[in-house]
Image 1 (cartoon, rainbow, N blue to C red):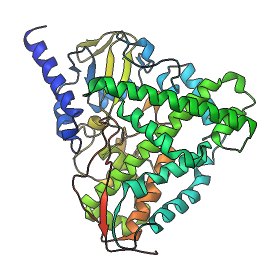
Image 2 (tube, rainbow, N blue to C red):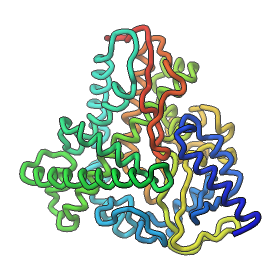
Image 3 (cartoon, rainbow, N blue to C red):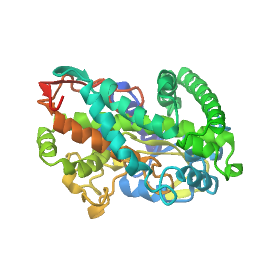
Image 4 (cartoon, helix red, strand yellow):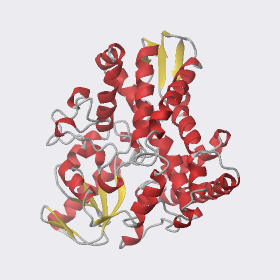
Length: 421
């Protein structure tokens, strides 16, 4: 490949290497803007990167886009035998997701999340009460992380005392997302696959224990479902692993990014303190402005797809930069401005035609979105109400290793006192 095409591939490849570099984790958005200049970016390895809102939404709803790694023409290092429903296509995806949803949301269990909201509030207040009355706290380690862990372990039926083990597994799995394109790929992949295997074995043991001793939790209900002949223990284990990892990792980032953004925008923090119900559009804008899932690295073309005169061939990998699309000026006026009022408070981010991609879109729209919203709203509303004169001790803070699942790994915040403590 020579000339202009080769240069274009080299430029796109260099931009994506920078996106995955820890050096720019604190602010990848200028790089996303450069990748938005072309509707299609072709990388040297033959994969394709899209960064514009309209193109990504179109492909997320296109049945020619697959989430099944078997469809790739260049299978990488993924183990395919224990994948969860987010790595399946219809009809298997739809069947397994519907079974899981029986114990999570409408129409069978419409009150699961709403019934959890008082418990979430108790956890939030308890975590704040446990902080020093004044001084400094790491609001990742002491607030944003333990909140969703407590909620998801209770919901799933995972013993909270096992948190050290699944925290280590989760860290390795998350660090290995899109590992093939990161420095030290071989070791990251090895650690990712070992962690997945260990967590899968752990989940299968939990399934056996819940079958023998039902307790009404989600895993217990799946293990004892009267229709369990249609879902194998391996699939229950893979679903449990997915929900345990995704059920706390992304919400940690959403909450930490939210605290960070509010502290960088004191006017917003003051308004939220005065108007607690404003937390609804605040969380929607956070999902657009600082989404915890920056991009989807694992989509595959099931057939040739043409975008702007470029053919994405069958079997090619397609990377969708959700965070870039969320700041596309063609979709969001003044996209680099934090502006919760752009969202309809009653529309969960759909008002005014400005639907964000913080939870994705289409077939694989985030399964846990209602729970993540409930946790983030409770956490950020309480942060605004209870912390007096909070301020960042480091800006930017240190970030987690993963470029795809982006958020601070620590967030030291100083404050004068806690209200109600």
